[in-house]
Image (cartoon, rainbow, N blue to C red; front, side, top):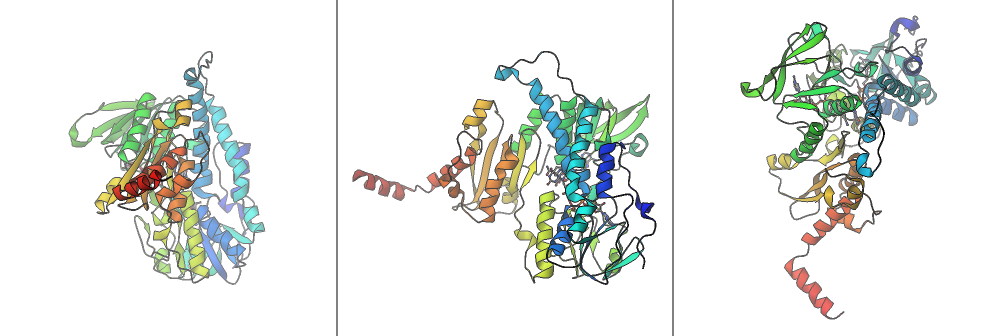
Length: 515
Ligand SMILES: Cc1cc2nc3c(=O)[nH]c(=O)nc-3n(C[C@H](O)[C@H](O)[C@H](O)COP(=O)(O)OP(=O)(O)OC[C@H]3O[C@@H](n4cnc5c(N)ncnc54)[C@H](O)[C@@H]3O)c2cc1C
Ligand SMILES: NC(=O)c1ccc[n+]([C@@H]2O[C@H](COP(=O)([O-])OP(=O)(O)OC[C@H]3O[C@@H](n4cnc5c(N)ncnc54)[C@H](O)[C@@H]3O)[C@@H](O)[C@H]2O)c1
């Protein structure tokens, strides 16, 4: 079949249509793009141009294989366009606004109120995103040997895909179509309208009152950012605490910080219905057990839905390809193979660890398993996590309650941030580092760090877990003074002290008597 003759049939528009968004689209979905003629057969076709698909396609091309990448919207996927990159750009401005308001404890007094120019904040976000988009451009991938096909992909058989009027035959394929915001059933929601991660970064005016539905990572990061930029923010969270997958002490610190920043948080709560009243949105709240632990009604200007994700599995022809899936995502075995052994799946679409670095790691495993008789197992990937609230919560492995549920015996080691010199110098008072080790050993089963730069610090524990090194190893690593990461060295010391059994102590004493 011929390549798509009408290059503009899949033109994409991102609002506002300024120079930055035009550059973004020009790189990640060029309006005049003409798909290449399909090769007779591809060694790898990656469906979805987010992190998972990019790594699969680029990795295959790097090995000299015939490789294609299919994307229906913007190359770069959620991370570049509607996720990590714009959210962290927003967080950077929000942090600056917060820091500027909190200088007095450092003896620095700024005159007057801190002014946030929201339009400028969003323009900066768009400019940063457009600058980074160079890495994810159709042009770059083509230069690196990948055939970039823009358009929606659909399986037409267990070994063919149709895109832009062409058939791509493959020996191996990787489904990497990601996910999107799950929209809860709330009466009146569609009528009053709502934002998701796909539209919130297109705002040009600050919502004066913002309701965030969902208190997971997306809800917490964006709620704090908007509050710091000047919105009055309310979070409605169905579970009884924010960030329920994290250690309770970690989410309690974030909840306390949110309270300090006047963010209203209603837990064990849902939105019953919404309606438009005189140009504003009236929101009726429903508390678990019918007990009103907050107001029955609130009034807001915008609603942001951050209530979880759902995988993009519709309209892919998965049945024709023999690929099984559920509402949670595409089913894969431990080698990331679907029920069609020629087809792998990676990233958010499998519904496991919804992180960019996880998508990257999964696709590297796919490459190894698809081309090198590999045996890289999904269950063996060590994936750290970080929620970029202030303070950040970073973690790895299992929490205390997850270990208890699995009946795994463990010992915990904990270091408070208040004992850390750097934190004391800078005035950081909320945080800790907590490590759970298999009982009687230094094997790290899980860890959580709450600190300003916890996301950077967790890397050291990731290294321990990946290399199967005991916690005590950290005691022998010299860390710079004063740094917050010294908390981890102290945890190593704590662990080593537990090895000082009475008989070892007696032996030491005896040696010292003669030295
Ligand atoms: C607001 C927000 C903030 C986030 N922040 C972070 C963070 O700080 N750190 C982090 O690690 N993770 C973060 N994430 C998660 C991260 O964005 C995702 O885990 C990551 O993007 C997953 O990559 P992926 O390739 O699996 O999917 P995606 O990035 O979603 O890419 C899938 C692509 O497939 C395309 N597609 C879908 N169907 C088809 C089809 N039929 N044909 C062709 N193409 C198709 C889509 O258009 C999309 O471009 C954040 C997410 C959100 C929403
Ligand atoms: N820093 C990061 O790495 C980062 C940042 C953002 C997102 N992400 C990824 O994206 C994923 C999705 O994030 P998320 O925050 O949307 O999802 P989530 O599932 O982690 O959190 C959503 C929360 O909303 C609650 N909820 C669901 N329906 C509700 C309703 N009707 N009313 C009130 N509360 C409701 C859920 O119980 C849950 O606690 C995360 O799990 C994470 O993997 C990562």
